[in-house]
Amino acid sequence: MKATLFLTMSCNLCCDYCYVRKHDATMSPADIQRAIDFIFAAADPDERLDFGLFGGEPLLHMSLVENTVDFLEKRSEQSGNTVRMSLVTNGTLLNDKILRFVRDRHLILQVSCDGNPLVQDRHRRFTDGRGTSAVLETALRSAVETLPAVLVNMVYSPDTYQALPGSIEYLAGLGLRQIILNPDYSAIWSLEDIAGLKETYNHIAGLYLDYYTGRRPLFISLIDEKIAIILRGGYGRSERCRMGYREFAFSPQGNIFPCERLVGDGEKNRHCIGHLDRPDQLDRRHCGLPGATAKQVQCRTCGVSDYCMHWCGCSNFLATGDYHLPSPFICASERLAIEAAFSVLRQVNTDNQLIFINHYAGLPMVNSSVHIPQEVDPERIFLLSKQ
Image (cartoon, rainbow, N blue to C red; front, side, top):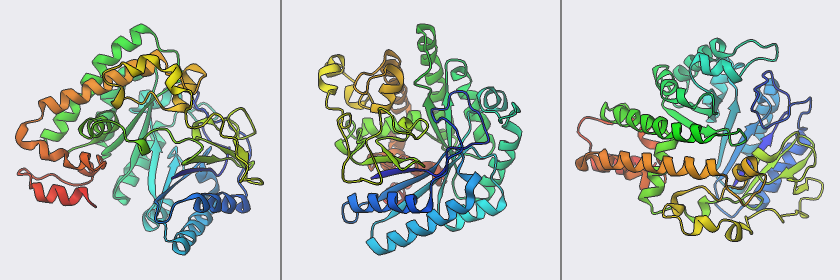
């Protein structure tokens, strides 16, 4: 089960594509506990619970982050459920004290960074208009030195997608090895952009192979996640959209949403399914994609439908205004990503395909977390995939 806690709606940046409407609202400790209790009550015994500490910028309220982590650890001990906590930040407020806290409390640090300085400063600026790249680069270097792993979330849009390969190399040069690529689904993507994506995605596939053959593998979500899905024969039921049933987001106002990308300003809106005052009265009419079969006629006859995220309700809504209707861009991007992943699999030497054994287990990030020796030991790779 996945839960996102919007600890605050305030932020020190004004990224022009952000789907969170910023304002001065902060989640109360009481509501944080009620949201956490809601998730534990809904969880199955022994189910792993993923909590994202989000915003706005959560590091504006570090004491609230610390208190939330304390409470989550206590609830985990009481229930027996394993809890995985992620701290999602723009990175500009990171310092040595915060990084030590993240390390010592075993949080997953996910930093939003769109790429090299020119790309980063195009859309991600401070509220006074200054670019963020210089501050963020210093923070990322410190994070790499302090933490065992740092995830980077890169958003790309029609005016930045061509810079993705160079930005991946830039981040790899800083020592970052786990990169998540997310398109701006709400942007207007032209046919020319979609045509250009093919070259860009193929370039990324080439980079991916270079890093692997050089024994310094990166996790690049565009490739790794699709390789995992291809090897396992498609998305499983539990991997598909579970908004409003196994995925929730909580705003500072106490409102409950089915997905973090649908929260908006946190006030009650068309996506809101309930409130923490009445957690047993959720309106799930738009959840679970009940209309997908009727509206996705083209998906039923598509040869790569099993490997495609056409079922993602929030992405569909951001692109088309309909939970159940994927956009032409989503269709094209997914198809091109699948083709790029297939090309990697075809080009990998048959003797080295055991490198991808962890992908079968649904753990494609493992390779980027360990050094792969020149002579791959299949038993070692298998054991690592089970960690």
